[in-house]
Structures are given as structure tokens and as C-alpha cells.
Image (cartoon, rainbow, N blue to C red):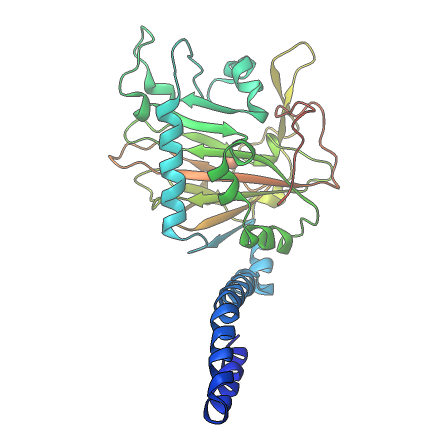
Length: 332
Ligand code: FE2
């Protein structure tokens, strides 16, 4: 880009001395063509640099294979994080919770028979914190302070989420991790509300989003600083090598059930906190054991998660998360 600009200037200078009329003509041409050309070249250069910068090194890929996760700081700029937070706030503002008591909790598998939850694979739906309600079913605090998460097709149904989820950087990252034919399967906006943000018990994502062979990558974007106090992720480094412990599937007679292959407890003593700054993405192997603890602090810990599978893998019909035929999965 710089070379092209210098070349134009040199030519310009040469004609400036010898032919004033042509100089004006050339200046006009430069004015007409160089500005848009420069914008195009700058954008191309930026995208190229971003792509090069984000391309994972062999050491990073080796660390991901060894640990089962990868922390990439400054993956998303602050403005994009804030834009997503503002959009999520607007969605909650427009959400009418009347008559809906679908409380999300990994403690209560009975919730999974909730049609509202099972039908959310191709929708934008809202799930409350477990501790959001008084015994009589009324909210303890404002609607805005009571939502646990929004899921599970934000990336396909909302323009702001679509734009955030489909960037060249994410596409490159997923490609570097071996997903050759990506499909964006699921998105979640997680609030981890101050004081009542619920615990998510230890699990690996393959339990909920399973493919044969297992070709799933989870991306966890920190939209705010995540600390031990406000409920950051914890993970068992190398725990992805323990194998698949269970599958959460649709039951034949309706509802869901947990298919258990290995009921040995997780080696909790190996859990380590992943405290990260806003703008960081944590990449999660499908089998990596991870959790997040309650948020008793006065600060929220908002995050956005995206799960990507490979189209070459089989997606079982008994996975809990399904879509209607009129809204198929798509890539970047
Ligand atoms: Fe998870």
C-alpha cells in the first residue's frame, strides 16, 4: 500500500514540473481514485494483519492440545464488547417475562423437560437465575438483574450478535483448530448477575453438544473482567484426555435424560481459575472439564459463548439442541 502511494507521488512530482495542465489532470485523477483505493488497501492491509496476528502459532496449538484450553487476550476490542453488552441489555429490556418461569439451573435436571428450553435451539430465549424468585414466584429484583442467560441462536437471529460471531479472526481461529467446514451451532449470552449469579457445575461441553466424531470448539468471550470474586471459569488442565463422561439427550418419551458412561468424580483438586481481562477469548476443547462458581460480588461477569462444529461430523438426532428444518446451521 505504501509503495503504491509513493509511486503515485513520484509520478505526480515529475509531471508537476514539466506540464502544469497535466499536473492538474493527474491531481484530479489522484483525488478521484487514490482516496477510495487507499481505503480499500488500508482495509485489506488491516484484515491481512489481523489474520496474520490471530493465526495461532504451533506452540499455541500444542498448548491447546496439551491443556484442552487456550487463553487469547485482546482477541476482541473493548468497543465490540460494549456493543454486545448494549444489545443484550436492549433484548432484555424488550423481553416480557409475564407468565414465564423457566429457571435455568444445572442442579435441576427436571427443568430440561421444559419445552421453552428444548425449543430454544433456533430461538432467542431468556432464562432466569435460580435465585431470582421469591417463594410466591415473584421476582426478587428487577427483570434486568434476574436473567441468567439468553440462548441459543443469537448469532443467527440478531444482527449485532451475527456480526460479532462471524469475523475473519474467529473464522481463522476455528480453522487453525482443525474445524475445516465450520457450522455455528449455539450461542449464549451469560450475565452472571451480581450477588445471585448461579453456579455452573463441572462438565464438559461434549455432554451437551455431541458429534461423531467429536468435532466441537467452544469460544468463551469475556465481555467484562472475569475474576474469582465475580465467578470466572475454572478448568482442569489436561482433563480433556479423561474421555466422554456423559451425554445429555432427548428421551424417547419426551423430555431429556443423562446418559452416563463414566460416573467417576472429576479430579476437583486440579481445577485452576482462569481470571481474564475483558476482550479475552478462552478456547475450550469439547472434553475439557470446566465450571464457574457463584457470583456473590457486587459486579456482574458477562460473557458470550459460541460453539462451532464441523459439518463433516454427524450431529445426532437425540442431542438436546435441535433446529427446525427451515433454519439450518450455517458457517461464517
Ligand atoms: Fe461449558
